[in-house]
Length: 317
Length: 317
Image (cartoon, rainbow over all chains, first blue to last red):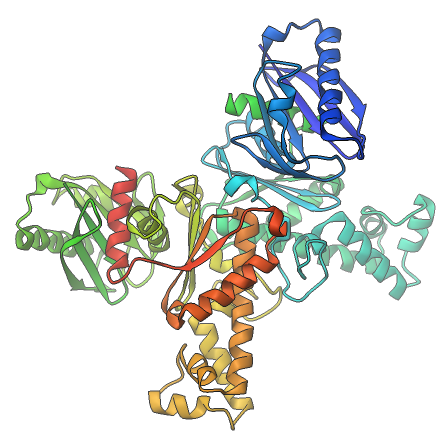
């Protein structure tokens, strides 16, 4: 038996057929069309699924179900999509429309929720019951598993850990509040802070690095720090504090066994993860009296989005 | 059939026998002895239970189980108490020792966890599946129910919502971090801020009120505000912002249907709750697109501690 995993992204919709051990048998993608009506998006996804089945030589009857990760708000019970970014779904009954094409069950989840389920089902720590994934990318995403179950909130509207304030009255956040974790710990925030530091420090190596790269990125400060730049070192240390502060908040409230770090910034290496681990261990409530929270890099490589979506089926079906 | 509820507090251990509708049939208490060995604490509690059964004329066989709320960290599965304040239990197997006295099942929970379960089982909103209780007292306590289940964290060490930072680098907190919600939203924090405001404003009515009361309390600023004092008005508005900020954080991450407000400060009246509701509604992520979070005063009156502990049995047994 197989699972289908669909990963809806801003640029493309990726799909794959996954076996019970988490091996991707076949994968493909279609370009995301951000302006077309919702029904056409479903048609595109059904077309992608049809192609996967054909090319993989797999019969529809061998499919346990399809999981889909979307960047937005979904009711996990009804699979109704309330809202998505970059692709148009508003209060949309995806299951009903998709039934016109295929008969297997469909499960939909927020992409961060899929990511943590992917780790729990197919990752190196598979079987973990209490875990949080934190993705440091354009925003800060969080997916939370408690006693093996997703915490997706009333009608799926929870899990917005990036939009918890760590500095009241601080940096403006896209959500309308000030001082959200996302406004400090996302790659977007890091780039903003890198630009600010560069303005203040014309002597910093970051100027040279950004020039070579053609832009200031989430890596600029890390690269400059590794090359010995003092301004970058200070900047990265402060960034780690921002990330760490939110991790300790989650740790104190939820007390997971593991916090997985995902998203582009988490590729900065073991050193980065170790610093976060040290911060969490030092500042978590109750110190050594309370159980240790392990901080580690997310373990699913490559098509984590497809695997996470497929895992949603494995976990729910 | 009946439940026994035991509420372990710093001053006294309260106990009651509760029927299936949440009526307390009989109640009593013993003085807390903070220095005696753990086994003697169990003996005291067993004595209290014996007295309740005798005085109530209830047979041990009519007891479904005993629930106990403690101010500390408990593993909900094993009922092992890792740590408590004000009464001595450290890595203690309460169930094993208590079995020497009585044979019915024993469930132990953190007191804030019991409070939210009490609301879900015996409160005005009974049956609620997704709810958080926030208690504004000496500290800030949180108890969280998701899909009808407690989020007590790995080995019961979670639920410390009071120790999530809302202002990085801010006021010192007893837990070792700076800027915790508790360091701004607890009655203790309010009293500290009231004293600071009084120092700066010798003309404030708060001086007179505190003199009459014999001390500065969590009520001083509220009373002065109601009497028209401007300094107090500013202070209370800021305090509401502090409380609200943490509520929105919880709302965005967990997205409960209801946030119950408990603890002494929550007795400041409907007006206070309404202001918190307005804050949460205004700043919650996704605005009107996401489901509304209701903020209301905790509904269990009187012996909420006994009822919450008894509800732990009703919920788990």
